Image (tube, rainbow, N blue to C red; front, side, top):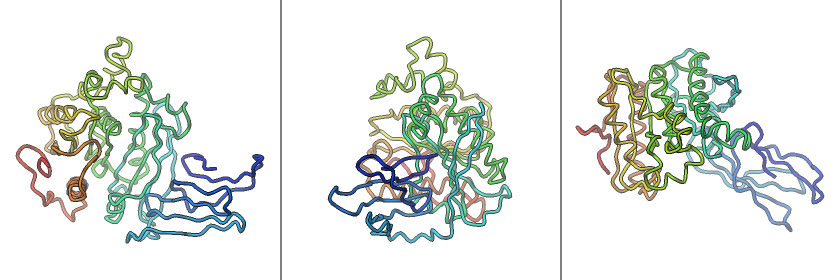
Amino acid sequence: MEYLENVVAKVRIFDLDGKPLGQIAVPGNGSLAELSGRPESREMFFSYASFTTPTAIYRYDVGAGKLSVWWRSSVAFASNAYELEQVWYASRDGTKIPMFLAHRKGLKLDGSNPVYLTGYGGFDLPVLPQFTPGTALFLERGGVWASANLRGGSEFGEVWHRAGMLDHKQNVFDDFIAAAEWLIANKYTSRERLAIGGNSNGGLLVAAAMTQRPDLFRAVLCGVPLIDMLRYQNFLVARLWVPEYGSAENPDQFRFLRAYSPYQHVTPGTSYPAVLFVSGDSDTRVDPLHARKMAARMQAATSSDRPILLHYHTKVGHVGAAKSKTAQIEDDTDRNLFLFWQLKMLGGERGPGRQVGAAGAAGGGR
């Protein structure tokens, strides 16, 4: 059986009477998927991946007690040059929060490393280490990939979920802000080299962090976000999320939603970080009006010279649904260029090579 213990995958073996027979030593502190086998067979299979390890499928011989690689991805990534560590830090209320950090071996903790911090914190969903081309590219260019396991997810059961929903939603933002402060205090990075990013509920996360602590980040990637939490329930399928967030139509819930709703907390004259909002017309889950009006409001409000951009699609849905491979490559390029530009990972301080249109849309209106 597969377990999640302190956000690390474990596989334990039992006999048919429930007697424990031991544990399979999984390859590392990444994540497992597709654990399978047949009752009459002496073998089982599972896939394993982490931020520093491309997906591989493992075969376990039950009789011999031997684990071996059955298939491995051919991605050209030097996993041995990187390491994945798990750290724990204290949130605002003292709650201990785990966070995964992926980076090159021998990383110097001198406050100069570019860091991309991400999270989710909602809907009873865990955030587990996965290998993606974007993560690999960021690591290869000397960056640190940080993934915080915030309250609101399922990493520690339903209690952990409920600690980050409804009137406890601010805990999620506090957990995320504390992660950023920990990374700076422990010399992984500095404010000038720290970027944050998230999609959907994760977009709400980074928008709230940005409006509550605009001084803490250099750049923000805010994908298909919920931002106006006083009106979100009126558009598309968002009323289905009222059990998670609450609704401003309820006077008691209005109070805590108003306290953190990012759109209502944009303050004119504030020096905001660089922001790239990503959305589009074909998103049938989170209405693109959130990103559009937040981009406009922040462009009018910010006192800094850092760009507030809107990357807008006309034919792509929520988090890339129905997106062609070509469009995905172009979008990933735009996002990475934005990050590398703002975090000074391009070999200088020059801007990105691709054109940024007059309408403030990186990559145009695909």
